[in-house]
Image (cartoon, rainbow, N blue to C red; front, side):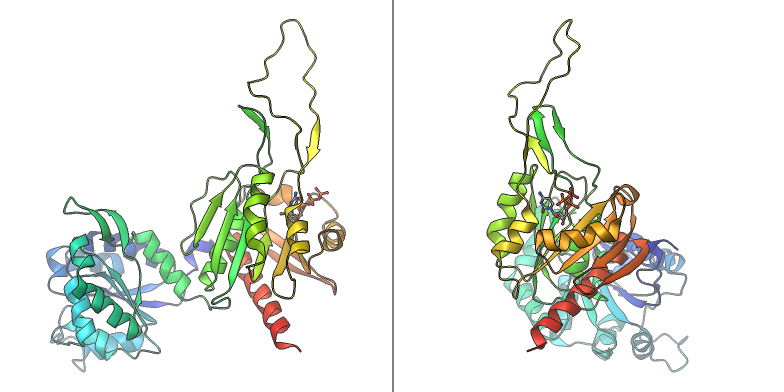
Length: 413
Ligand code: CTP
């Protein structure tokens, strides 16, 4: 089964729609949640039915939509109780300014707000995706209400920033369907790294020979980006330092620094390393760079068959420099070893060479560019294989492993 269809397996989502043009995005959101393995019970306010029909939402969710607190189909006539007792989460998307105001006041004069109030807060947490015009969002009344619902335990997702249906531009757009799905997936991950600062290097580096050519490698950055996502999902403040890759920044990553060369990666990482709780070096850093970059493209010389010769110079070892610079009782350093053979042996050699407590071995040719991988964790005591799986699942497993190690470190005298 592919990774995307298992992310929300077993989760029952109570999806509430209040009135707003962003209702059109919720058709797609419903599809994405179901594709990720969730079951979805849709509940709509009367205003929401002005924007999208219950017929559409029923067809997509495969369940009759809940529309009224007077719905006689419910045997006990208590849709607000039944729906929340069955759900793992209540997500209100879109949440209009009016609906947020109702939540802040604890009103219960129609099914959606009644249900939010009747929810058992522990077993059915409330996630709210605001959607409104920027002036409505910025209004002190809305900001006051948002602060109040946060204080009451609601999790506010977004809003995003950009073009608005009214033709204006600013804060207040509802997050896109895929973003809301990812927020929900992240919500269910255990917060093993809450409050921790994590820096991750990812991708290849590119060492220019001339303005159009350079030395690089086949690393796609997918493993490092998956670790960044998994760390963010676990509640960490993540800084991602990325070489040239074609990957979007995972949601929840606080800061991304794009670099090209190993030296630039070194310059971006070293000043920040000591302030981190965890540094994970997944980048496939080019070991050498041309000693000199040619200002102009190197041209073939007429009649000469000889290829140009380059002098290479060694790049700084970023991970080894971090390991030497930080207090390792405060900053836990993890290296990767990308090998083509004798994985365990090479990974073990790198433990000492880099001066770090954990090296994660993987076979470069078998994983570069792919969505799956297999890992071998190597430390001073031994080895543990994490068998082949999608990179996000492996990343979450690695996050669990690192969290367990730093917890042990801080609790053992
Ligand atoms: N690394 C680094 N800076 C370098 C080279 C490597 O930070 N200049 C880090 C990588 O991010 C990885 C670990 O060191 O975490 C091992 O990288 P790898 O390319 O497997 O090993 P090298 O040190 O380059 O050794 P070799 O090429 O001989 O295998």
